[in-house]
Length: 120
Length: 326
Figure 1 (tube, rainbow over the protein chains, first blue to last red):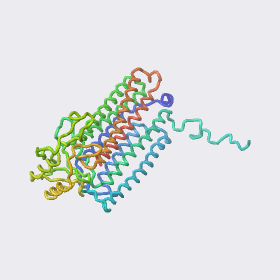
Figure 2: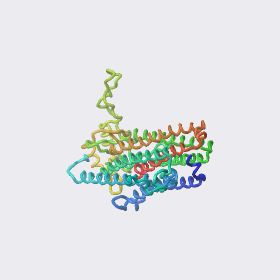
Figure 3: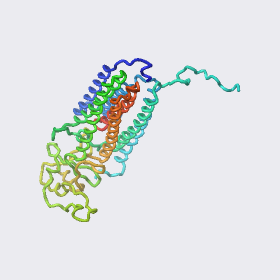
Figure 4: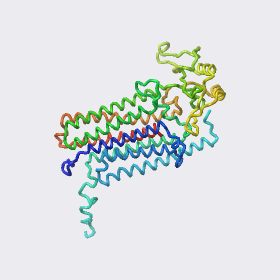
């Protein structure tokens, strides 16, 4: 109802197919990298994580952006709604990830250096 | 009386009241509430997975050794191709969904019908593929030995190729016969016997000089550590306590059982979302066919289920990365 009164919707099919193309290409690149695992990317680390894994995560966020913006049409929503959704998720998930991964790394060190035998 | 504020001075402003600052209908806004909370649920699961993985960072199973099957290509090593295909199918069903929403904006009933139908098919194919993936994971491929500490030892030949337990085992007398319920009182039955027991594997392993063991500890290169023949024999005789085939919630032939637990839980929870998405899509599909939204003058309902469907796709993108790629 809101739609018919506010503005006439133009057809977005061209953009939809373009986004589909982007998502497909990114997925192909990810799988390709995952299979060949170039040594230069697996042997170099940034902040304790392999470059390859950073690439995977960045490409994933890139895909997530297109899904949320183009398919879920966040780009057409008001700024308020968009920020309420995106920033809430980013802050809470970022915090959760940071805490749990730090803690996991700590337990790994305890297992490794402490007096706990687990490889037997 | 004078203290009563009659005017706030914000009339006509976005948040001054009396209008809809977010410009979204109630239904859509509630769908966004749900999606955000569901996103936090999923990130809780994925963060827990990350926690466990960081805890066992040097012994976590390698995903492309686990998921190597492709339909009709039996015995061919096809790491990740199938899951990549599944990802495509889900992304494509997202595309047909957004095309249905787009057609709905133009009140084009026949197009909405076709695209909704394609979306449902895509979702169903995805759930089916997920089930097939589970089946392969549950039944396993090569089998492995398990140690007292609950670790996994896998058998290799000197060329570095995996060798299945069935090729190692020497047929010989078994230590016991499986006690089934039809041979005694009906409610009483023994533990299931493994296909191959430890004695058969040990005998086969001793007899074949070509066989080596590898542990689940990862080397610098991210490969599993391969023991020498002497180390293998020592490990086999000292630590091995049984065999394990496939994966379930308590054991996993590919490595730590936690990997299997998280795999079943997270992909299962996601698969359940896809399944309910397909059901909701079917309901909306029939509503489209009988003309409910045509009469209502708006296809916004298609838009709302569309949001949910895209969200399911969005979650899969993350599950795909963290389970199969990273």
